[in-house]
Length: 525
Image (cartoon, rainbow, N blue to C red; front, top):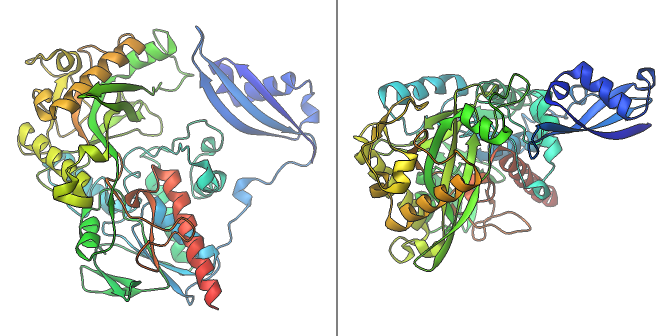
């Protein structure tokens, strides 16, 4: 198989026109069109550092036999309907990919999801947005596909050493994702497309003999002599297997409470909290692309910001998190009486708004470990979310303030139009946060305004609170076996256990846990 690797730097109108781009790649490689049998794009990234925005394209040009198309290379899912069972708690990316890997390795996954399937879940999301009703088992965090299904679907990860990143992307494409995720530097599926893909993943599990069960919230663990035998669900049904993969996500507080109550070791861990900041997307485009109008060839622009702050001789970072260009702010509470916000973008990223979490690092010394022990971070989250709800009026309306007014300690400014459907309530956000967090947020926004001219103004507003950036609890596990340090056959997994930070890293962690169980089962034979 002969090929030639080429990298070109081209204008946006060239990069996003396949025919024009292919001619440019062939020309730059010094080849003739008839010499090239296939062009395989490896990476596409935007370079906005200069006056003109350019795109860098890497590709392999095949001169003879082309590689097999990913849609023609099928992962092998044998019939496991009669195989040994593995219990998987949670149908987010960690749980679903763990299930598929179990099937590949000859084990039958039983996936227990507390929420509803992606289609039925939509009704509960509408109830949050329109009626301010929060279903504790079906919301933006809980339900088939996990939090990522209806809150953005970014596939970017820095955790390339944790597993096979390309394999995860290939599986997504085989189940309906666009091929662009295979070569975009920051791949993104979009909330409008993820539900169908998640449904396809579920159908693949069922077709191979696995099970995916909904409305199955785990209420107890079956533990005998420090060994996890299975789980009990809220309808008093018991499920047992060769191992239990606990992939419940970062908001399953009842699971943390249950583990703590039963004396199963958990730990407090650092996390971050803050706000969502919302700008007009056109303003972010102008700042990042240095032009009045990005035109039809460039995607909605994004940003990544970080700053170090010092308060009371303690240094803490403040940083952007889950930036959503052309997106929406969504309500992510998991219980009545709390207000939580998150961000999402559809695949086209064509909303008029840009939003990003701007959050402050919370370290262990910032928590009341003496009073709350390993649940100290969780208690901090709960207190801030309840306070936000109370200050905003007791519904799913979110507290908000104009950005410049917040940094200058001013109140009374009229709020702007927003993408947040439940609505906003004007409040003094400095009174929502503790003095140290408020100070760090103010200092961070001032620094960001210096880095991005036009960012800090009253043409933007902050919306609270962004508190579910990651799990405030870690469920410790053995580095080699991935089993819990105390309970055998329990495999803490994904974001909720503290071992992932997004869709792709959670999926890779799910696969690793499945592989560890399969290896242990094989040793017993």
